[in-house]
Image (cartoon, rainbow, N blue to C red; front, top):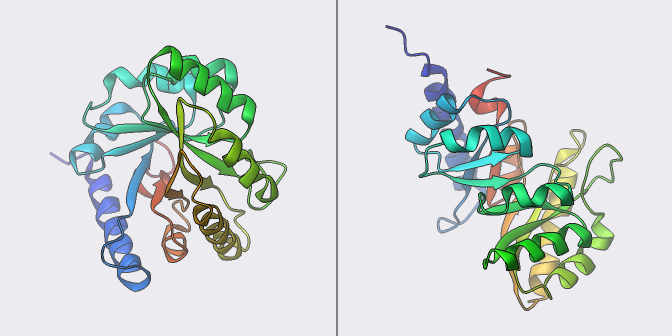
Length: 229
């Protein structure tokens, strides 16, 4: 009988090969690069198959969809929330995710902090940067990023762990370089209560270039699961 998951095997084999090649070309041997499976619209059985093949990090974009799927996921995988998050939806995910990558305002940070305190936990977050200044995308501007990180560092129940971005599809390499520069600038500040060890950038169409510019976490959906299942 034909393996209905065979395409995931093939895609994952190719992705891992490309990751290893890019890492060998651009990075030190001790630098770890994490692969995230972006699970938007993907049925849990396909997600769990990817987990069984070694993908241990999942990225969820939509609160309602995550709510409907989370109980079916393999519990060995960690889940990050990577989509736009409204403050009134934080309560639905605060106890179910390891990290929120899409924090782009102090208002959102304050709500995450409030609910984290209520749950007696510290929530890891990334500051989402709109590096291309695109009106169609969420994220704080590059010029405002450092101030937001400093302000968030004063909150006791969240921990800033780095930056996240979705660069414009045009001139992607230019913007990936700008993100690396910004990441290094903020890291050099050695801000108290900020642990800059995650630069989340690179998706199905540009993850190898993102590795060139210092990405520590690439987020791949279509490249792994196909256009849509």
